[in-house]
Image (cartoon, rainbow, N blue to C red):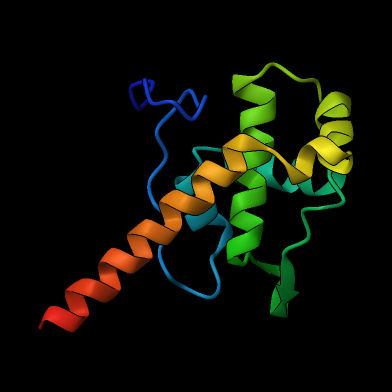
Length: 123
């Protein structure tokens, strides 16, 4: 289990940056968000905001916004102590649009992507 972070984003566990891919498998999302695949499948039933695309054989393909949503759900449940119902209400209300944690994740992700672009340009 990774060490808890002591950063100012309010998160308990430091999660890896999200790679600049278009689609992610459930296994990749599981690793990126430190949540087991069966928990992700359960959250799909509980949170209408989490709807990965399903392709052949009912395989799930998560997009970047889905990964951010999983991280936000994880933060609400594991770090902030919300119940499933409370987290669902939090995500559906105005507070979801102003969630500081999600903003920090987006900024962090943009920075990683910009640094990748910069390293490509320097070559």
